[in-house]
Length: 228
Image 1 (cartoon, rainbow, N blue to C red):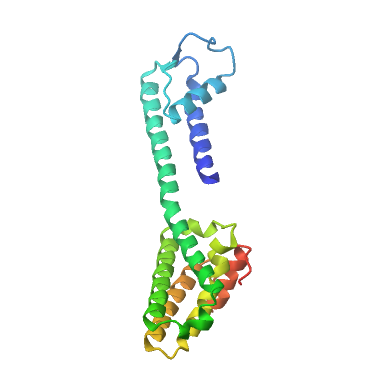
Image 2 (image 1 turned 120 degrees about the vertical axis):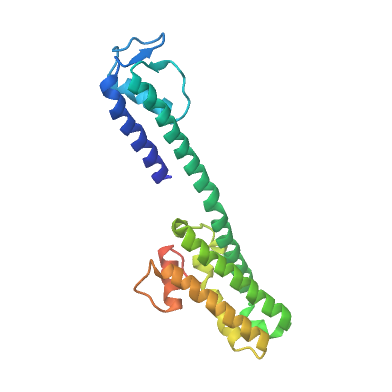
């Protein structure tokens, strides 16, 4: 939000500097406050914001040839700014939802003490759980690569915080690696690879940490979450 607001302020202020030398002589004002009755910078700011927001009230019309070209150009930049902001809002939500989904899944598995009883679970079911978790973690890794800004979003609820729940995935990996089932051990290999990929995606912000667990602990500390 701060970045988008800064874009708007810079656009608005920049175009004020373009219009200011031509106010009021370069514009035809409709009935209302007489031109020159208040600071020219306010008129320039009004023209800039109306054009930037694409409102185009039509109460101020440029009369100089060059000025007749500039407001439409600013309208295009304002439309591009609005489109970029809305597109970003739309694109950033799915990665955050995926992250919350995998965090909640780990929370439920932890609540059920799944790692401690993994050998008691039917082999196909346990393998499917591990494979599904690996796929979700891989998706989170890709999202962090493509939408790196999502790293800085913090979840207030502990059960939806990946930073809080992620260490339990290491417990699942370790328990599955020690399983007597070959299918479960294979799932542990897949899960381990997914965790390594995620740690690699996070390590760019914690370059001092090399161990996967240390990276996850640093991630939790950065998000003000203690690993369970």
